[in-house]
Length: 102
Image (cartoon, rainbow, N blue to C red; front, side, top):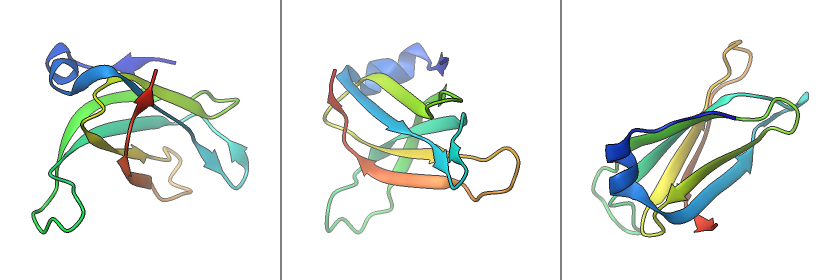
């Protein structure tokens, strides 16, 4: 599993928490790139447009579909997007994810 994250992004959104998950299609678990974005002002009842800041990209495991974004701050919520490079499936988007302690 590889991770692409810049020092500035990790400094701003960094911490001692992580996001984990799996990527799955109807055919089973798959290896896909998963993009992580930090959400700005995403609170219940907030009518402002949520801005997303790119945090990093990881490759999920091709056998188990598992991925992890380590060292995230707990004070942020995150949106995860996984794209299918074959074009068979639409992108999967999950928003409002809260990191868990490492």
